[in-house]
Image (cartoon, rainbow, N blue to C red; front, side, top):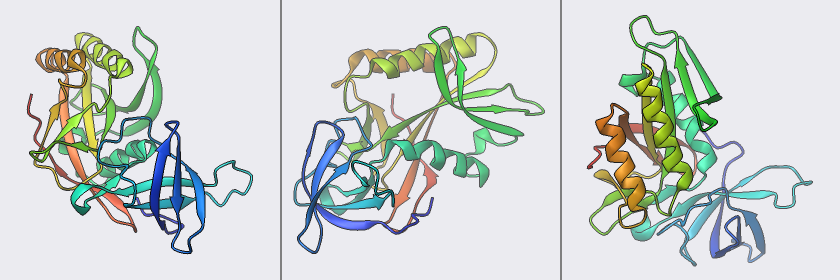
Length: 236
């Protein structure tokens, strides 16, 4: 995913009300920007650190600029736009990076499924040998003191629902896939955040035991582009 128009560098002043942040531009001007991330953003919303903004070029928007990248602790760049992950994963499938999801003829997004009326992020169909794959994508930005990424960074009843739906998909004979899209490149592994949401950790292990496939891939963010490029081990 290339950033067009180019991102604009600024300094974070504060994040508030989940969807808003105040930043200062190099010119000294201050503005309020949209934050496309409802999570806790641990280590990604540090006042004084650099952030990068996307200009929507839409003067009618209340907040014309959106926060896309952060300078995290230690200087690592982190993609904070949760809306980008479906595009990143679709691009990675298209380029052949994600081996377990190759060979499907069709990819569709936001397809309604399941007893709890969810929308699957990606539905892959038309494989000659494999069942259709229901792919749920989760955005990961948080890292602990050991360099291990973790998910979630806040209690997620929605994420728990998705795990139940994926187990039902597998029970019906399809492939249920949970793919963690890690928008940073300084991690060695990924784990469930039992200290944040123990119910999610329990369900994740149950889902894996029930046949839900767990995948994780790291992205390499820069102010010019962000792309998935390597798999990451998951420690249950």
